[in-house]
Image (cartoon, rainbow, N blue to C red; front, side, top):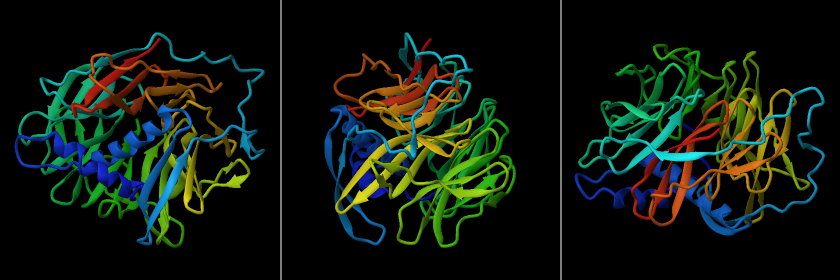
Length: 407
């Protein structure tokens, strides 16, 4: 798995929140989850005030320290290199957006703290992990909002990273290095590849991820959960890379990074060709990088990164493979995390936000039973845009696993 460009900043959060919540049993640090939480918590605060300015500190790949600010984007006329979606004269108008959304806490068999780490395209399956008293950190499987399975693997800090519509999940644990495994019908099976991280599985059972030490791997594809991993081709000069998501047609989304460079988006297409994702032009300036988040039905969502001196700015996009063009997401859409087959985008802001193809944004309801300020992280979005999985992180450290259902 390629080290995310913001991982150094995320380490600070990792050292605080998970450790503070584990008074019983030996000290444990869920590195990958805590770093992701830290990045997303910081992102949600950028959007809490619309155009907030946030000071950040990150360690560059070359080893230096860079201070920069994330600034809410202005809204001038977009450059011609970025497409603005227009209604089709032949297609029926899509729904205005999700309606009558309700949020519920997922059952956790008594555990007060839990995460939702992934879900399937149908909206039936969600997976995660609970934090009961003691050292155990079992993974959990929900179907239609009901807890249907719990389990553990060898090693520590097990995490299910994705599940498909057939209920087959993939994940990893540390034993002591990172080790891949699959789960189906109550059975956990080690996957081939040695030190490796599977990150996504499609309904055909094809798995993608990376082999090698955590954050220092190379992108791979497993043809099935029982197959050996095949290395994916990368551009000359690539030092690290990872495959992060896979579409139903076999198109793979990921990132590659050259030596002393941060990662940027890369595509392995279903026809066998490959290409680096183009860099969008934002307000007349070509971006430095593009960080993709997810792919579905030929649509990629993510954010552009533009470095200028000691500042760094972000803009949020939907990218269509069939046209090769970017569409800038509207104000209030949040940092894109997932995309549905209908083209809707699920973003993280003050609360989860759904953005339709027409740019209509709908903020999902907060979980009213949670106390104090909550940050909301999302990890699953159904193909019809009606089911969302995620969790809330509050000041009381008791993460709440949540499911939103809409009409």
